[in-house]
Length: 291
Length: 314
Image (tube, each protein chain N blue to C red):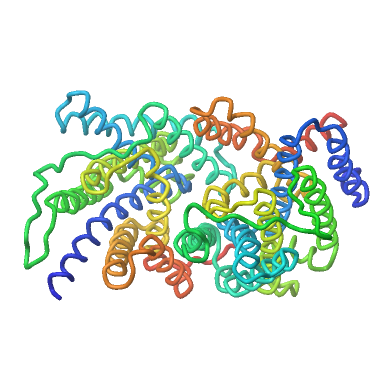
């Protein structure tokens, strides 16, 4: 009883940590530029795929990971420069379609550059499961949860303790006012894409030993990350992380205790359910409409 | 040109010409198939445009209704011996009911929240279709009984070209009528400002649900036609990509332009057919094309042309 509960909790937290990182990436870009970036899942894919192929090319794992993060950051900047920036001022629907187009293009590029197979990274500290109170847990799960916690901490510190981070926050609060006090808002938006891409890639590297990766894993991750983001309340970093963890746990418990056929449906059911009761998400503030 | 297109009868005649003239000269059944696909997509896109372009409500899950319509004509005749001709309206009724039930709570949401809730709906429909293997055949889909009229099996793409073309014309006429009615004026009021519409006495919740139901029925009919044309359905018909493609067609043709819906559908149906030549690069090129189109034609093809014409005149 306790063993299975612990088992499901750990697998829920592991998946949830990845959703949380995807949702965090969504939040950073949304706050800086009002764009919901549906290519966020592709950064996770790039993180996994590039490190797999760099490793196969003979690079040691840490270097392969670094290469993958840099690759994702380059793609992130390219996406911002070539697709988002030229469409500045377009309506939200148009911007969403542009990022979906971007996701298509990135996926198509990965399909051409790599292949259509599933790939796996070796676990960072072996594959032998650890037995805790009867639950058997792969060591990589601790890497995912610990790594995600570190990333969230680093991002929080960046926003609260550095001048650059505060510039991003100021831009998020009021783009025009930020410009008036001398913040280069264009640079800040680019930076937010860079940061989100790096977070996504790190998530991809952490999770690939458990869930495998292929050129098309990005879509479902982006959808669930978006669900987590909305569940938490659009624009709130705490909400994004909480939303991700809650979705992961719901999924794991539903799959464990109810049915695994509809594992992927749980995220959306929970999200729709919460939205119907709380139309602004768990941590979102009600907004008055300006007439 | 603008005033020309604004006249209901002239624009209907134009659409009819666009259906009949190619129908007389198309060389092979491959082209008739592509033409039928254009008309079927256009029908669904006109419905979505009523919701997105006129009422200003986003739906990223409209393919869910396409899926319901498609599987209605697949499941009802195969499992319950319902005649195909009755299965189509059954799908319409089912779609309308689903849209009515989920519409009221979901349409209270705004902006990105509405987008993700409708997205969730579409994904859920696709998941049910993929998982209920006993009913739907699972991810591989199931075959669809052909339509029979007077004992004659309708399976030629040429026949479907004319059937879907006729349906498109009817759908266009109904949409025009709707827009010219008091409901249509309420829709446009809603698009400009929800609060102002409410102050002016528009029952906002009711209008939103009404147009959501209507657009769901359009999508359902399109789904039924698609299934009957192909003779086979898969859950991809209800998938997220399908929903995105529909929204892209609306924006590409022009939000709030019925004629644009046909242009947008034609563009995005025909283009990938041409791109299959480079099938390795199909995804990549489609993605890049979507980005380019949205950057340079973000107001839609028909409104952009319209503006260019007006500028030249003045």
